[in-house]
Length: 192
Image 1 (spheres, helix red, strand yellow):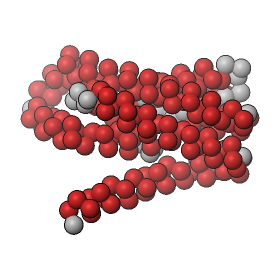
Image 2 (cartoon, rainbow, N blue to C red):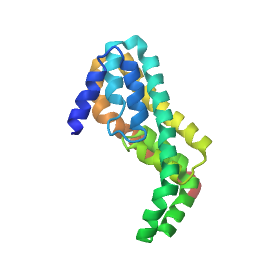
Image 3 (cartoon, helix red, strand yellow):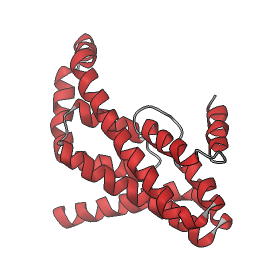
Image 4 (cartoon, rainbow, N blue to C red):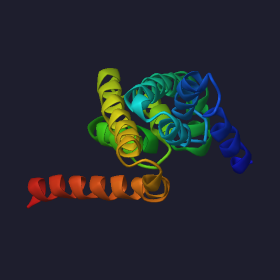
């Protein structure tokens, strides 16, 4: 099923309405869709390299707005459905403790999920469920998604098709390692 969704998404990149499709995919990927917008960004930039800035901007806007929708899903469903599920499993106290920690570290979770292959939708929904400060959420989402999409689009603009395999296979790992190093550095400065 994921392969069919991937192929369908790739086919969208060749359509005249590809920018709208990119916006839609970026929007729904931030709240429930399993395929990241990168699968549209890559062929779109390769097909029209001078449009790389516009393509990255459309992906960023769609993703951040979709993240707000995911935030709303978390806020609305947690109050109506989520609390009953937690009560049934006796996990209300665990959730309260996690929510308190997320208030302090939530910005990092949004940044990490926004930059890495970790499903961004999980953090957008959870951010809404624990009522992470909305301004903090939006600013972190903009920073993370813009960084990711503009770097991918710029690499494709600058190096063209030869960089495609690197982006598809290794860029997520590089972002992940960078964030581990960054967080590790903050930890060392704070505790050593």
